[in-house]
Picture 1 (cartoon, rainbow, N blue to C red):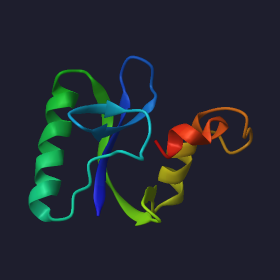
Picture 2 (picture 1 turned 180 degrees about the vertical axis):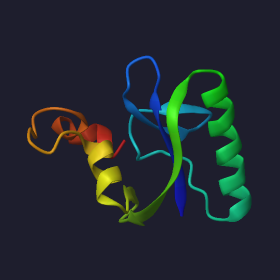
Picture 3 (picture 1 turned 120 degrees about the vertical axis):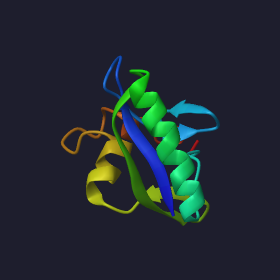
Picture 4 (picture 1 turned 90 degrees about the vertical axis):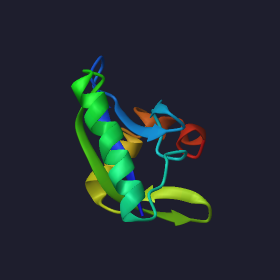
Length: 100
């Protein structure tokens, strides 16, 4: 499975494509289960990039564990949670939003 991620151009925040817009948490990201869905997400990302909404647009691998979407790669886990040296900062400081 894959999801579409990027960084919002206005503030640099990591975002994931969900429900027709960009969400600040990975939990509700639209899941691509096949190549057609991946192609659809890539087209959405390309359009958002062309419209100067986001940068660094990528499809990333995810898994669903106990109903929660989780990134596979460490880099993407960090982007989803926040800085690794301060647990009181970033999205990890509000764990209820990560699962939302």
